[in-house]
Amino acid sequence: MPSRGRSALRRIAARGTAMAVGTVMVMGTGTAVGAASALGAASAVGVATAVEATTAVGTTTAAVTGLATAPAAPAARAAPSATEALHWAPCAGSAEPGAECATLSVPVDWARPAGPRLDLAVARRKATDPGARVGSMVFGPGGPGDSGVEMVTRWISRFSPEVRRRFDIVSFDPRGVGGSNPVTCSRDLLAERPSPQLKSQADFDATMAYNRRLRADCRARTGPVFDHLDTGQTVRDLDALRAALGERKLTFHGSSYGTLLGAQYAETYPRRVRAMVLESVMDHSVPTSRDFLRSTAVTAEDSFREFVKWCDGAAGCALHGRDVRTVWQGLLARAGRGELADPVKPGTPLSSSDLVNKIAFRKLYGADHAGLATAIAGMDASEPLPASPTSPAPLPPATPVFCSDWHLPVRDHQEYASLVAMMNRVAPDLPYLLPIHMVAACLGAPTANPQHRLDAQGAPPILLSNALHDPATGYPWAVSVARQLGRSGVLLTYEGHGHGSVTSGPCMEHTVDSYLTDLRVPPRGTSCPAVPS
Image 1 (cartoon, rainbow, N blue to C red):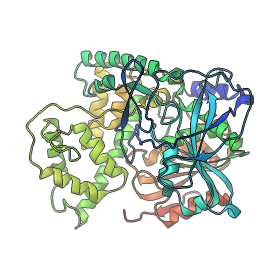
Image 2 (cartoon, rainbow, N blue to C red):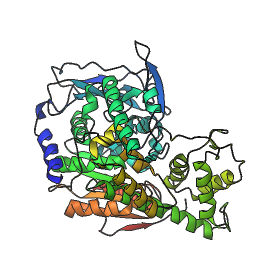
Image 3 (cartoon, helix red, strand yellow):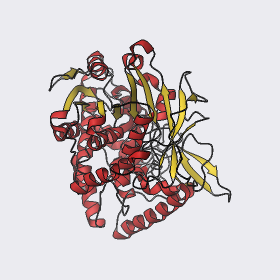
Image 4 (tube, rainbow, N blue to C red):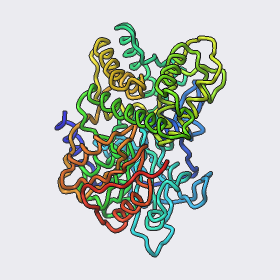
């Protein structure tokens, strides 16, 4: 598996270099695409926000938020006859003025550069101090399913003032997301998703059959890009964007799932990297389903234990003086019986899975211990609902991107049950974490870009940034990726909590800014103290 993934990347990269930059067209609408993350997004934590679109035959479909309509199957266009620069125009509907948008034409399949093409939605904000401008910095969004266009148009404050001063900040909607030929599926079929709580071989077989039906439906509605959503293809898209921006070398900041894109770019084009920050690092070398699920369960449970420890010592915790775990287990039991009201939708029962992934994980993601304690106390004091069945929230429409990058097979129900039991032992406070949902959703799916150890020989120093207590991308993943990068990997440790760390206090911000702007690499072993959340 390691050699297969690495050689596939380089085989694709060796083809079609003359067509790396396709025709670029003005993007007439500003795209505001809601985040949806496979491992837990700060705003959605794997809860897909979808819009309904009606095709010519009246079929209701679901696509990533931000598009008014979604075609049943986008028509493939012929390859362009000439290469052009990006043509920028003001983004319509941008929450903050100053953002510019464009589209970049790239091959659907980089192994066939003269074949069908798709348009990638791109956005930028120019450096606020043109006289001190270093160049363009491309941001790789997380998820999979997060919109880079929305990050630039709506959430530019996510970047430090110094980075905004010195760089044009550029990002894009990865293929299959938002304004870039989004994965589109039947809303009715998505609503039929089986529970990940598989109780028999019959349930396992039914999930496999459902996955086959859903993939066929999504492929028909999405078009040919559906079979080319993997990060290996997006690496080529990123290099085409670098060339279209006129940058000889890439300055890149990837966050969460975007670190997979950055790492594989450095592996494919090590000598085209100027500077690269990988924040909240994913380890794509984790070899098996069991290893993947164990590592994600360990890191999530660590964050929950940190929350309990904080509450025990903080007089301001809404649960201070109580047995936090006992209160929490009581809520899980009520949710399992369908008796716990969703605080966002009063009167609607909240499933135990959504209690874990929508409520607890979201708060841990933002290191909001006080908010989590308040939410738990409020639900504990709420009146029980009459017992009723519950169903988990939909998965992100971009789930096929995850499936195309992660080969996580499960042989049968017996093996699946053993994986769930292992996760429950490792993370007793957080049953049915989102990763087991993703594994169930990917059963039977092909994987174009399977896990492998990184080989980025020739890359310059790459700065990795990770919190010690990150609920989604655990610190051991960052340590592992830094080791795989060898002399190129430099790990900056944030001694705090939460997912995302580059602007967590002046120490982190200054260190990352100095690296990006002046290529000052911190000494190995550098760490920054936690700041109050």
